[in-house]
Image 1 (cartoon, rainbow over the protein chains, first blue to last red):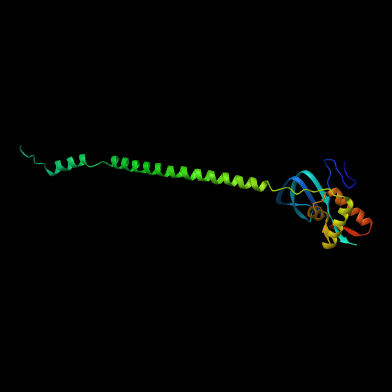
Image 2: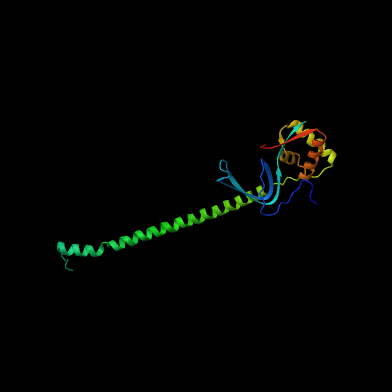
Length: 61
Length: 131
């Protein structure tokens, strides 16, 4: 059963994140530079079958 | 028996018949090269066999590396998980959610649930990354 913190977006969805970590069956990284926005460069990772954690940083209160 | 006497010209012609011709020399060289090729071929067989052995050893090593035990993310009682997560955050301020999951070997659903509860109880504070 999916937990309340879990989403399964439909295909064709774009997810924006500040930081995330993926746990997947297969991860292929392509380091060829690609423009993410007009200013920002990045690269591409193709992932198969897994889940992604949108990161938060944790501090003692 | 009367001894025959040859002129210089006759001797030269006879000598030409006896002396191996260039074709014969070439044949000898080809034979020598063929035997050399045969010898090198047997060495090549040995080298190919050795490469095959090295390849199979590499395959075995690779298979062993792939057999590295996978990290299991386990479910434990929520109270116990909350204690572990809280202690981890105190020891590693600024740690990320995936660090907690990975380092404590805990199920991600459990960690997210516990973090939300600890945040509500104001024991920890979460901050989005990149904002």
